[in-house]
Image (cartoon, rainbow, N blue to C red; front, side, top):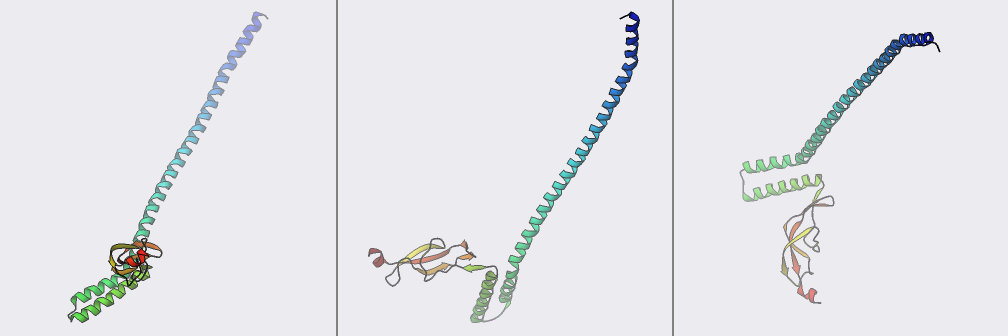
Length: 181
């Protein structure tokens, strides 16, 4: 190759070199703009998701609070009339028998309020002692009743449906004649 041809090739390369660099710069600038756009979209999406999550958390807290207040309200409501009657009884003037009758009516009203909430008393007197629902506070020696039969209820126990709220406190029979047999 002659020097002349080499110089022509060099001149041609020098002329096209700046064009290639400019093309590469334009391509890089376009890619950078695209990447920045994608980044901005992702940041915007992240901000929206965070806000949506915060709103869902706040909504869940409020719904839980509302449900709790509703439960308390529906539980307390049946007892408000019982409380009203106690207040009326305290204001009333009357004999001891009248007061007793009033208290018995209020007790019946209270039992109805509990029943409306599906709270029922634990059966005790006359039943066989059951440690799942009874708590024995003492025993009475006797030959008249079978061993471990509940003779006396000291404090009533309650359950809601089948779940025990509190055990009944009872005294039970201790029949040594049956135990020794």
